[in-house]
Image (cartoon, rainbow, N blue to C red; front, side, top):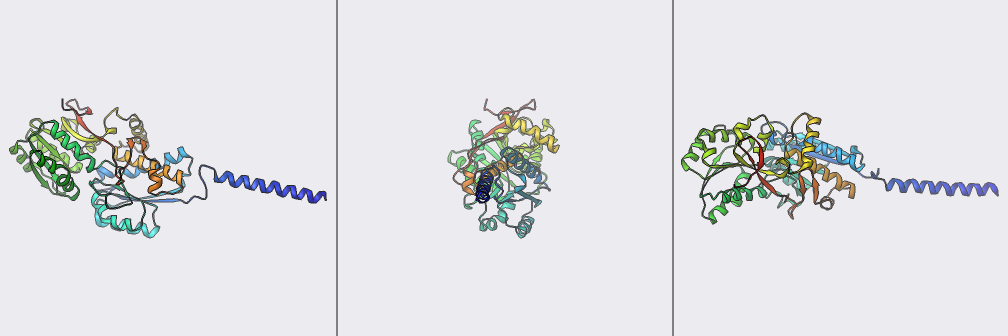
Length: 379
């Protein structure tokens, strides 16, 4: 009888211990039954466009690592595979096909514009979240599972208009790449406003591989504009600026450049060649605006040996958003992503509009005559 009683007590204790163990595991920060997350990336890591996106994967991986550490999540749950499309749409397709042969990703990241365009329909067919490292103004609109946590042409265009208006420009000259994303911004978001307000303009298109812009600068000089708007990748913007200086147009007119001007500030381009020019910019690229960004930039440079730009910082914050979404829902989908927004990142506050596109405010920066970046104002 006594022996039977001891057996019953032992069985009860064992059941309680097992229940406690199971309950403890299910309530731990990192539930071992949760699935792993496979994130596939397909962006230019080499080639000329890599001046914009070449360090994106590093910023993203740093974000995954640090977010997992702070949230108590095993970083090995996240399998990250960023591959190089070299800025070629055909290669982007090949990269995507190879990645899907390995396993269906839970999250996809692609860029830049032409490469995302080449694969966006196929990615959408798989019904997985697709983050775009692209500038196109309306790329997320017709693709319900696309997201963009990156400054883009939709929120940049109003700054060009602001710069034109606050300089009371009567004549505006545009240097515009003959590429879909830039033409869309120009045709749909900028020129209609100028037409409506009776502002005269001249737009010169140039091809992606164009090297010499002196003939276009000569046309700008003859046009005698009040404002010059320069668009394109950094390897377009730099020779255009040099051509403008040959005609002293930096002094004759007010010049504003697209976001890619910032890439020139982070490479070895002489500040003397870049000064007295305005540029569109996220808050974090204006010194002192976002304290967290300044601290993070030092950590990035210490880790990777190179100065990061806002693109790499947005990659970092995108990764942190994904980890936080996973920590709350044990999956990553639109609901879990939106559940952690707005998100206070190292670039400032991040939120998405109804089209899943970044709606954060951009600013106009200015490299003054002393070679110091400040926030532009019309005075």
